[in-house]
Image 1: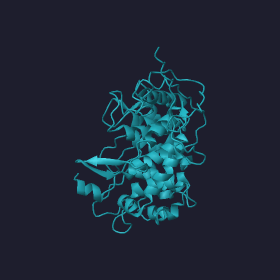
Image 2: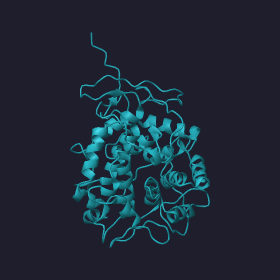
Image 3: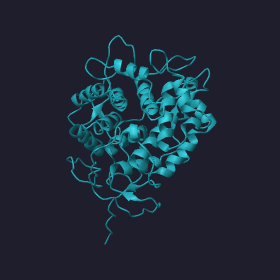
Length: 377
């Protein structure tokens, strides 16, 4: 896709999950964040000490990851993606970060700045479309969810009534579809986010939209990314989101089948692979874990949690990357670390999107608590 086309079509990058967590997740020590660990059984304390930057230090993997992520924001309020040497504002990744900050209950100051950036007219229209000739379902659903999580009035976000805009994109079939001269790129990610976000509104999620997603389930219990394909091919990320959306909207049997599919497709290292791949990655593992733990699949969920901890950069890493989560076991790559970390935080926190809230989040962006280096004699 050309750079000019990218300016016309917003980046559609996901964020994640759906029920209230019923078990307390363990915390990892600084050493565990750098080395493989068995599934722990009790939480470790959060260190209250301050770092040189004024941010608190923490042993919690999710908070440490969110703190690192906050420090990567361009100008302190957004993310960018680079194509052909040119940087473009990345609203999708910025929303992923806002959701991650809420899930970790930290970096609230950074989340507030990012939310204000998203509400700027030129940023908003570039992501959602102008609302008339151009309106994008997945982007609108994702931003609506972020506004709800932040406690910002979604009916007046940057001058846009997000719930009304999203409902205007509901087709007679029950599918939320793009209205665009460039075609319809809506998919199961956007459909699931739309159900989760609208379920949180007074009007609830439209029954026809819930039926549409439920009917898209593959025979094996998973969900595809694209609708209407000749062969229904289940995808980890799409299944994780769809299971959460259907659980939130009362389709427990469909949600259970989706969680069954995820459990059956978990790798031996506890992680999950992208469609067509075999190696575990932090993005898919974060999304799947954030569905499994709230869904009551604690054994599979804790395996996923442990696999994410093993990808986190610990005290043996360069201080500049401590707390970040590598995309996969091949090692830390700054090109994909922000997106991997944002989605990993959801799994590390075990939070679900249906009840996710930034209320009570700590303002600071914590750093990973590491022992002070030994003084030289």
